[in-house]
Image: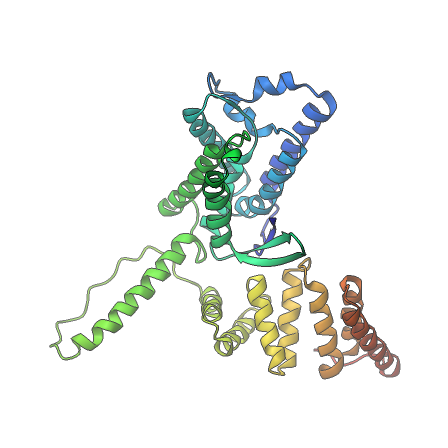
Length: 394
């Protein structure tokens, strides 16, 4: 079982609109299913596809069949909705959420006469909106099978291949029993289509502010690289031809990248090409431009690990510190604290900082070998602190 549990997105403001939607879904479930236990009320407000009323296109979005149905929907809404709400703003986001549910309900009603309830269509719209706005983000996934572990997957791969195609198209076609389990796959697909097309249109017309990380910007850079490749291939053919004048200006409606955003993009491009030498050099320039700048979680960790492997201990420590500042609840935060404790204690002689990080590491490390290492380093660092009263600042 693969369960998304987090993303690399750091919200700039409190996503009140998404919190409100989660609270309403949970609250209505508690009242109708736990306190009242009245299926008659739910039947009145679910979407009756045979003879739907206008109000049912809204009310069905806040009803759920059971706790598992509610929990699964709210997990996805929390993971993807907070980031989309942050980008859109609370009121536009809530309206988008409801409109996505209405469209999903209309698609379902056009293909079925059965009743339907649940927020899945609305959340499907939020999921593909996340893909449009944050296509290069990585999603942390919990693998729960023979072993339990976490790993990161690019949003493009997880959402398109796993969540949309496999869960809603391929798997149901392979397992005909899924089609009889009262899962509204058509509503899901309608929500996905709405959530992809509407934010894309809003970006195109400027109703939603563009940035260098949305799907349109990623596509534009891909097209530019393809054009550059074609130009290079044609340069050899055209070298012997007489000069015919300079080309005319290009129309370009994409907002120019700031120096900071351009530098960050260059780092990510080098990492995507597995050029850690150049990526680390560009990252250090980025850190000099903006000391608080960070990369997506895995990329930030890759840079820090590479700097540590190259014995660039001071730069590695700053990169690890930036990682913890940006992702304090990351699954591997304890290991990063341990790494910082080792660097500060052994190489930078900042023993007071080493003590703080080693104690934090011991709070989260489970492997006995790592705990033994942390305890040994902690005793040594505390001895230095007791003898010298601390260490130099890093």
